[in-house]
Image 1 (cartoon, rainbow, N blue to C red):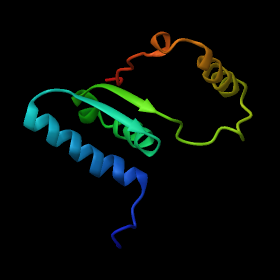
Image 2: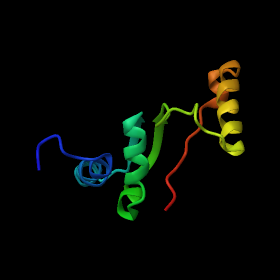
Image 3: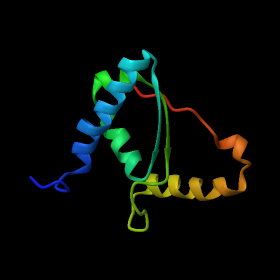
Length: 102
């Protein structure tokens, strides 16, 4: 295996998972995650591990994990439209805290 021969799944399960475990063991406090783009998908994948989701208090996952132009599913298209409409809503009204499911 070469240094750069890895997948985002491996980053989520090994790298991010170990970072969360380390921080939790050193601080004995739940972790707040901020992910952007690839960090969003890595976080969502890491949260599938029960021990990781127990160590996370909240997550702020920013930016999409893919482009949405090719989506044809009605439900997803409605979500995209809602996202576009959020630009007209004051920022204070759209900030929410989403907790991992345990």
